[in-house]
Length: 132
Image (cartoon, rainbow, N blue to C red; front, side):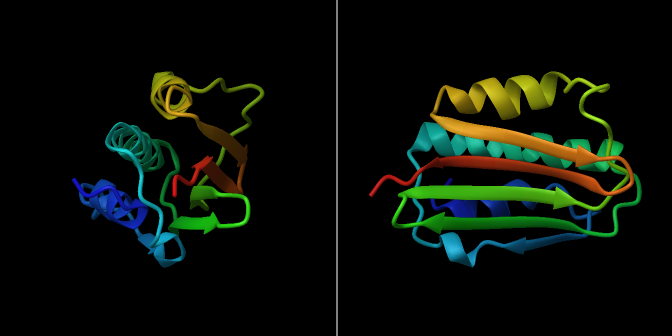
């Protein structure tokens, strides 16, 4: 697997041709991740897409947006759907989001944040340092 963030995203999307995914990842063309971090980001992205498939309902759109901020030396990957959403305070994250998209990423110094609103959709954001 190549370790550029856009390649990681495109590879993770391959098993989800049933979802209406729009990747917007060219803004992160220069972001290259270490192999173990790339693997963790890929696994977390796949986990989030499985959750979209299973829980979002007939999502009209799924957007994967990757970007980086050279001044802050940070990259960001956002996965957003406009599905049914949920109330995070009354629905704790399951194993996939808490362990794979949360704790596994933390081991590679990548943060994750989940935001969801019932009737609006869900956004999961991964953020990490951009190694030069």
